[in-house]
Figure 1: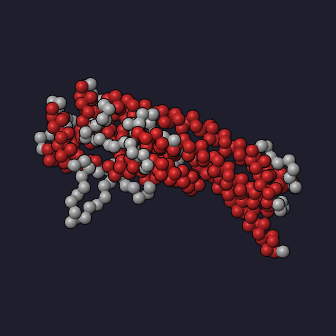
Figure 2: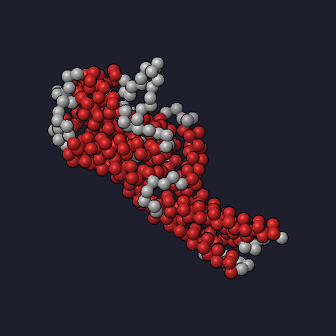
Figure 3: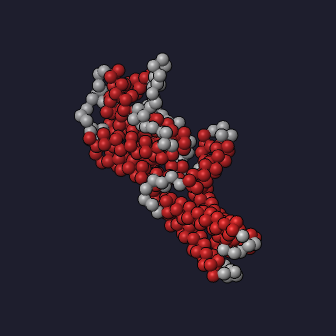
Length: 351
């Protein structure tokens, strides 16, 4: 007899734990204004991502892979409340059984009825009836949370993509740092463009906040296949690093602040998905050649391209390269990690 009651108690505790876990997952995902890694969400996203990876890797062109991966984030977001409801329903099945409803099929019917309507009317006891109504309220709450936060997610997505699209207009279709510097030079804003750098700084700050508090945003792809927020971030940071290290002009505090904000933002977003991800390049053993991103030849090509634009450059190209390489080490590993994670188009930082 003692074992019978103990089994019911354990079932009640397990069911309550599952229900509480779902509630906390919803609160941490959509209500708590800070970056939280939720286990049940991670499992859902990883399972769906595995399926999409299998489909995408079979495609021969990036356009086809992009078309497939464009469905990943929306489908994962819609699947999230379904998983929550399923886990909560199973938890209530255990609770109903623990409260005296011995027929598992009837427990399932009670839970399903409560979850999708306003509660069970044919409950065996007042306690089962009370819990059925709480399940009905929980189901309504979970669906309401998703619906209410969809506009928030798409507003953040729109603000992100506005900067990405504007950057393409300035840097060109190939989106290289020298092209963006050329536009800044032609517009007369290379030496003093406080508004532009402040706008990009705010964009980086919002990326850090929105893409860690709502991590699924990182996987929403741009409307155009060739665009990516990761690529845009790389171009802005490469442009700032190239100007600071190569162009002979007074230091711009607004550009330096934007560069700092960008490095911090990209690093923190990458560490949210993988704590081992670091914004600095990995150490290289002494007996191996250092890995340079980008290689020296690409940098010197960019140096010549800027020289052809008539810009005043620092005369020591080797010193400029070393400075640029040191600056880029602050974010290149995080950029590469996020580009691989989000299946971004190939980066063309220096053209």
